[in-house]
Length: 424
Image (cartoon, rainbow, N blue to C red; front, side):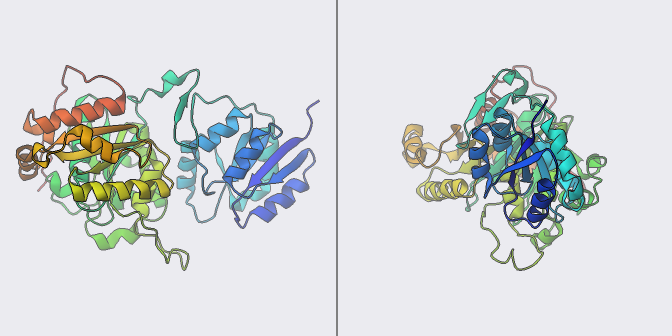
């Protein structure tokens, strides 16, 4: 006969923690082994191999896919509890992104004992791949199911201040993925200077991001996702950004995560982010969103981060500080650095620049895009992507970047290019 279900609890100081401990303590067949102080403490306790179930706060700092994989690897089944402040739709998709079947709402905490007992009867299957705490991916049996070319990847394009070319790279990368026949959604999540609509010649005032935020808050985004996109071609669409920078408070916390999870279900997702990673010092004073939450949420949700910098002295200094700041912000996704506008007049070779960049954070790859003013000017003036302008050195460089992201060689047969997206 099976013994009691041994439970670990980590709530990170949430209000429901005391109530949960009381309920579990009064439940026959349940033994609370430890009340962990944080996720790292939880993972250490799970490694001992004595626990069956972990009750975790869905918003606990450090709770990510790697942590859930660690629990599964030690036969610990996770039961998540969602705080009242998180919309139900956002909680459900966040739990799904972490690999959790469901999340128990804080208001339904009376159901926690039954959920724990049910989880204790399950034998969690081992993950097909895991990511350790340093961000290194380890493949296991069945890792072929994680083919990066399949739908379901979010690529966040970030870079430090100074206009290194984040939007240009994001648009070009999304167009290149679509050219290869991959369903791709381009999302403008820059809270300070959204520009993709203007860059792509979309001249109306409807913001796809604001529309998506409203639908996410109402729990209707999954069913009406098509209404927040503008088609750019057979395989490419865009969710336009904020029409004015002062409208960022209209995107409630959790809304972008819901949007990216819904978009991930349909195909590849490329997110153009802002530069600032600063947190709002007044975030704890009242119920107000932080302006940079869009950028931080995109980086947290991303499966891979592309960091754009420039190879000149000022750009390299900003890039070095930005990489350190990115690491300190807790981003765990693999990071690729793209040195944009590489040109021989700088007097440095790619090897010289690589030596300057290496050592700040572990990189999944380092890539160079050449200075190609003619191609970028032509795309901007016509409201087209770089690929619509024909072959160019910059387009070929973006193709090599896509090869690295997908882990596959470039296709020799081109699909129909994305059409011009000018809306008047």
